[in-house]
Every structure is written in structure tokens, then in C-alpha cells.
Length: 424
Image (cartoon, rainbow, N blue to C red; front, side):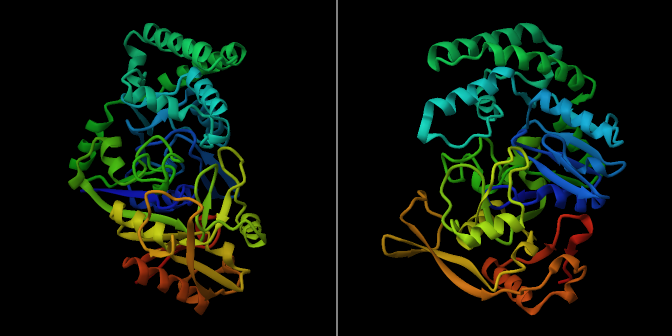
């Protein structure tokens, strides 16, 4: 058996949570391999809309094992809130959620360091979600982090040492007033720790490899998107972890040859939250239409997302470095009302046509577009590909020809039943 990987191919917010929920019946195990509560995976079914920030999106399906892997960073406050929210709607996940001992904890001071760092950067800030993700990963790489497994090994001593070091940084380096916010958040944080300790804390790498040896089917769920990868994204406007397929190996403790299918998810257009380059961004009426039709606001922060046309240069890059085997196109219905749809097929940089994702994305990058006729049809009521308008089939065929791999799923709305699996 191999681990299938599902990940975003753009700047995040592609709709991974919904697809995981739809695909989960095929799998025994769903696992998160990176990221933290800056990711919000939205699922909608049975007239319920729910946003998950840390817990894998397979949690709403019965009898599935859900594992938070070692590559994830966990904020106990957010985790506690998620558990309470799930309990309110009748989901008791205490028996089928497992947490890696090696997953790192986001401390109360990590959130404060995040805010202080962004404040100090001023106009050069990267647009952090201020959830403490970056500082937590920084401590992980600096070998100063606290892990979930430390809850059973001199935890109070380790916690006090880390927090005192952070307080010195906040006072002396950032000149940041933090005492009131820290005291309020620390109380909630320790309440979250109590909830965290009530769950099954495991050596997840052993458990996952044992499940593979038992021929269990496993789906690894990525957070954020490929273009936010710490190594291969639009640096420095990226997240702090490896969002690409290779991150599943290090974030779960599985060998590269254990990777099976790679599902690449993309929107039928592009969005981006926060700062950073965005070549196909539409700062006009069309961009506003896309934002309104797609309700493009961050599921974690509520920030309005920047909207633009589909970027094939970036998409090809993402497909290449992830080894994508199948494409899944989301929010196709958002383009329903457009008479003409543009697709970026290249960049013009300093008078030259470029087909590779460049090292530096800046204002000198001009997208080169092709135009396709829109379908101007309400897709939300469609339930089978035989009902697709010709213009939509042409849009899908164009993407497949450019990518060289098939589009196997098309989403035409937020609900489970609005997910159409294509027959090839």
C-alpha cells in the first residue's frame, strides 16, 4: 500500500477540505502533515458549514482514523475550540483522532513574537496571519521548540525556559508591550493543554507505517498551497513549512517510495491572501466580481482575498515539483457569469517571453493571456459531466492539454453533492 497525497497548487484556499471530505470514503486513514491553525479547511454538508484549522478533514466520516502528523504545529487554544465546536454539533472524535508526539506546540509567546515582528517590519511585512506559526517553526529549526511529547517529560521546566527567553526578546529586541495579552492568553493556553492531553498521543511514524503494512489506505492532507512553500514558493511571502508533496515524507515519517497518487487541487481562477506578488491579479471590476461570486474571504482571518485569472505558468511549476497525477478543479461555478475568460500562458519579463516560474516575481512581470469564451450557465445545479456546456469542456480540455495530466474532478458548488467525478 502507498500513501496518496492531496495538496493545493496555488497560493492556498483551493478547497482542499471539501475534497478530502469527498474522497475520505475511499480511505481508512486521513492525516495532516504540515502547517498550523493559519490554515482553514471549510466543509459544507447537511446544511452545516464547518471550518477545521488543525484536525484532519476526514473527521466527519465514521470509522476513519485521523492523525495529526509530526510536521504540524499545534496551538492548544485553537485545538480546544475546534473540539468544543465539534462536540456542539454531535461529533465525539476522542476515539479516532491521534496526535504525533513530535508535533510542535505554538506557545502563547509565539503569537506575540509574530505580532511584534510584523509591527517592526512596517511596510515590508509579509502579511502573517499572526497565529504564531512562523516563530513556532523558527524555534523548531533552532532546536528550541516544545513538542507534544514533552507534555510527559519535565514540561513545566521546559515551558518556563522557552517563555522567559521569548519575553526577553519581546522586551529588548522588539520593545513590545505584551504582559496583559500574555497573561490572558496563557490561561486559555493551559486549558487547551488539558484537552490536548486527553487525546491519544502516539509515535505517528510507527503507526502510519504499521497501517501501511496492514494494507490500510491513507490520504495525506496538505495545508496552504504549493506557491507558499518555504523553499519553492514566492519567497519571502510564503509560509514556514514545506507544503509540497515531499513535505508529506518528512511531515509523517514515510519513505518517498511509499507515495502513491498525488491529487493537485486548483481553483478555476487564482486567489491570494495577504502580501506578495500575484501576476494575474485583477484590481478591477472583474476581480471584484470573482471575489463576490466566490465569497473570497479567508476562512481563518476573514481577510478579503485578491483575485485573478488562472496562471498556467505557476500551475505547471506546481505540477512539476509535486509529481501531480490527477488535477481537481474547484469553484468552477464562480466563472459562470463571465462572457470571456482569460488564462495566463506565459510571462513577459524585460521584453522576453518566459514560460518558467521565475526566481523573482515583481512588477516587471506581465502576464500573456489567451481568451476563451465563457459558458454563462448556472453550473451549481449540474450533477454529471454530460450536462457540462461545451465552453466548459473546452476550458477543461485546454488545461489538460497544457498540463499533460487529466482533470478528474470538477467542483461546481460548496456541498458534497456538487463535486463531479469525471469519467475518462
